[in-house]
Image 1 (cartoon, one colour):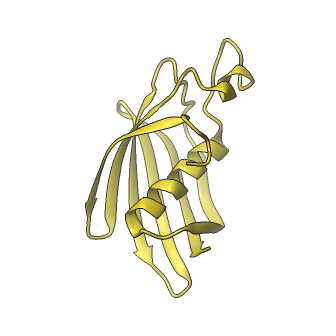
Image 2: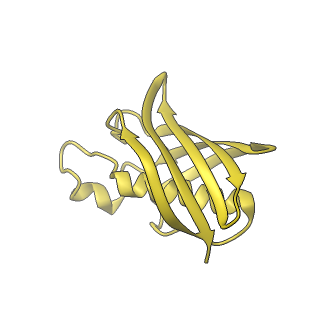
Length: 121
């Protein structure tokens, strides 16, 4: 885990090319003291790192992001109000690595959608 104690994986369900992970963001993590005091916002780059780490766990390999597209941050993830997230990953193997289509939600709200290509480290 790149960011120690930033989030907890509550469970991951894997079926064929799909994985669904339930995680909880740690509202007391150091990063929120600077992003932003009194109104914490989960940084987008941290969400992208979580997606990478979850994908590594599913495929059992160390990965590096090669490219991302269709990145849409659709709602603010405030860890004090909505720390529990559901990340849906559609993972397909490519010639060079893996393509991941992600949707991240809390409650009924879509917070993030992105497509990333990963290669083995």
